[in-house]
Length: 572
Image (tube, rainbow, N blue to C red):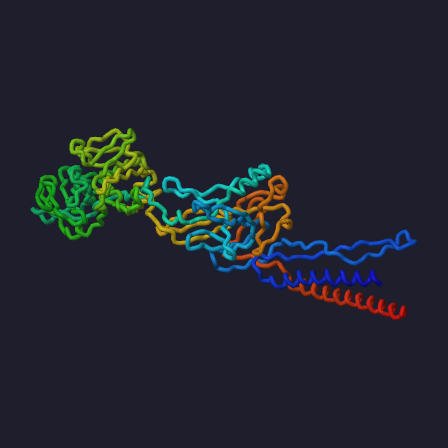
């Protein structure tokens, strides 16, 4: 009876602990990243009955283990950018920091956690929101104003490391301090590209008109007026008040074809202003609207049709935003002027009032300035082959002479004393590909100064910052730690795990530090949290079992006690 009394009592004590564990599971059914605990028992010491070889009686039960089920819990969206869930078996790294005598933050202890409820404090430190532990990762570096993301060893390299090397890399993880990333420095534009199509025909387009004899009204010609740009435009090609002079040729279209050669001695001049309005029309004999053909005088009629001609501007300008070395905006671009079929002149637009002067840098490294009066630089020359494809660049002087040095850069000197040199790329311009000029300019590499406006994590654990200059940068990466037997890690109050292991004794349990998605860690789910893996139905079942077990063990105790009481009464 004494054995039954003690066996029942051991059952009462141990099932009480089992109910405590189950009650704790039930209380944490909605706790972030909580892992279900399980109780196991073992039989207490057995003793052999006297005179028997195999009859044994146990002395009750003993608590064997209280271990955790590390199975993934359900993941729920929260809508908060700083909430992160791990869809896998990895852990976030965290640390407890204190300030030393010099005011520097020093890591006191290291932890692991699956609680991804993070916050950015007012001092721009990333911490675990419940207890304020700093989250550990690899902050990006800033070199010459450029934010460069930190690197995690790839999966194969981490696996090849010794346990001590893996532990050392883990210990090298740093707190995430975003103060130094509040501003993204400006960056000068390094190059620009102009691409698109240039019209195959510019200026006034060919038209058919009527020339009427001034001496014999019965004679008239139906003629085609064709236009060819005059070389006299070269000296004023980039002036604001320039006019365009075109040769006007008369072809007897009525005598057998639109493309017949011009009638000898019939060429005149038609002049357009920059907007495409007719400034003047002179006939072949220098008189207004009058032409000499075969010794007879003819006059151009219905000039109002010519005034409404389909005029295509021989000048096209593309403007975009550039940035100087301080990240300040400069608006400028390139002006193109057609000289002849397959040849266009170009030069900087001088659009922004901040621009003091502009020059070309040749392939040889020599600089050619528009301010050099002796050089008398007119601009660059863009050439196309017979198929309208890019052929090459050169430079031209004001007298039409070419400079045998291919321009590779355009250099802007600003009024504030700064200079900006940009590589030029016109390789993707086509000539003759369209009926209208359709060019675009794309600057490469430049940006304005920006301030940090938003933060976001991706599935690999990279923290992306968004800036007011519409640029983004990777500010840090949160690696995931993988353990071989995570159940052996000790539990702290927030379900973090102390990780101050002896490298010699416990490092073999440490698989490594990986980028999320590698090493079996799983991916990170932004805007979400992992909740408890406790299952309500199972906990309810265990409670019923433990309740019945307690009742049964209580009955064992009371029964044994009653029998002992009866035995005591017999003795009396």
